[in-house]
Image (cartoon, rainbow, N blue to C red; front, side, top):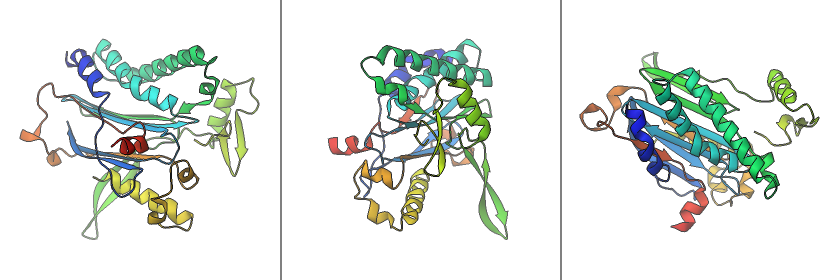
Length: 295
């Protein structure tokens, strides 16, 4: 089975980096690349001293996995998810004969359990690891079915073409539900999971927070987000390009966007399909600033 033969190619591509920069030294993007149902692009911008966002796209002729992990309190949790979640999805899909809702849930649970083991082992030498965490947004395509799973306040949106007044437009359809403590049901859930911590959820600086911590096309969308962040501070995007990491966090958070085309006619790879056993991986850099200064 193809999924069983993926282990070593996956291990090799986990270390790969791709893409290039622009005039903004903290902005990274990857060129348009193919997947089994179309093309995709990915872009990210760093604001924190350590890049807390992590993201990845895995492609093969039979499946496409997309993940965005918004870390908070530090990069350890999001980097851990970036390394372990997809291998768990492959493992359980192989054992159960293909991708399913149950496979994705088991992969989420297994990743969280493994991270808890890491926290317990590291607590004495690195106590701050107990305060880190990560949102987790995953999309998966297999057998003409699109799966979306979300923990946190990252968001998956489907863009559909529509003709209105003889002009082409795009209709945005939300595919995920925010799992955020601003929702009363989620607050109660978090409080129930931490009965001994009366301050696990707090209202501070105008919004609900957990422990005081706020939770090609891709590049254009990241730049649109940056322009909006600058506008809210009565600045221009050009004004914030030279603001160093860490300080820039006062203007905006780390931002990551992945765009997945689902229209097969756009596919740019030869003969309209991926080659047999072709495996591809794209990862945003663990730290954009370090990537460019190393060059």
